[in-house]
Length: 309
Image (cartoon, one colour):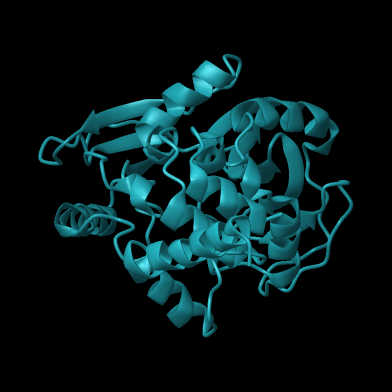
């Protein structure tokens, strides 16, 4: 084999060495959860591409995108017209939380984790106990993302905050729009309605046609009530996504206005989601356009990229 071919094989071997040393913990996590042998070195599935991102791509923008407080600032930089739910309280500790005076309802959150939320809707003793338990757990919980390899959480300093819960005139939450973008192109979208009541979930492909999926417990016969705003919603989310090789943008529409929810870089940590939806995300995600391959090139990245086509 010629020297160029030798270097390409060496680059491929080195990519596996990096995977099984630096990325061993997330590799085992994916293998255990998916009951399969991952291939993040030449990834094809959505799970393998998320695992590749965890191991290789250290895009510095991932850190503020992951921080729920810094993400709000970044969203305003990218899209000055976007609205944000009001923050009614913020602190590093929880001793001075204004339980008796804060305007309800609010969602109490931790900035450096995923799904670390408590919905405070009244001042009942049960809610007080639940909130105290939430604070206790959050104060002692170890850093999010250690086992699954979501490294962008690592440098975040923990802060607690209470965000006004968005509800409509009937007290229902607004529809939750989650749009997946790759290099400015929509690859998949789903809209969730009233997830704690009359649950409905509708999935769409990049052409905005309904795509059947296999999530259970949700009704499908639902037309999003703000669908007349879909072009505006997509335009706003495209600004928020920028040219990132892959990101999920969460927004809410309330009273005809679009509110930012969050950036999501590792949806379901790459191991959750319907097969149909994840196939759409994988098909549209070209990791050769990632920050990792946009950085100053060296022989390893050049030859590794050649294996990715």
